[in-house]
Image (cartoon, rainbow, N blue to C red):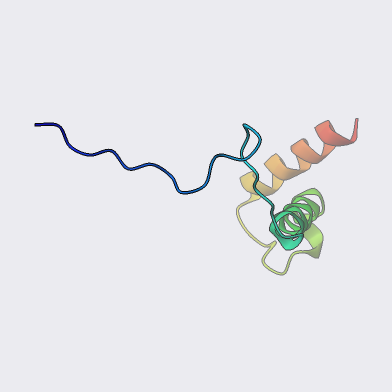
Length: 68
């Protein structure tokens, strides 16, 4: 005995997926990335920048590599 198959009530649209994102779905992650990148490139501006000297040296080295 075979089970009945269910079909979609509406046909697929133009052969592709039509997904629309709101503007903030791309703007907020981009803004967060830019802010975190700015803190990494200039750790003196960060409030909690007083940490392990090895981490500070790593960030300074990365900043030098990026600025070349």
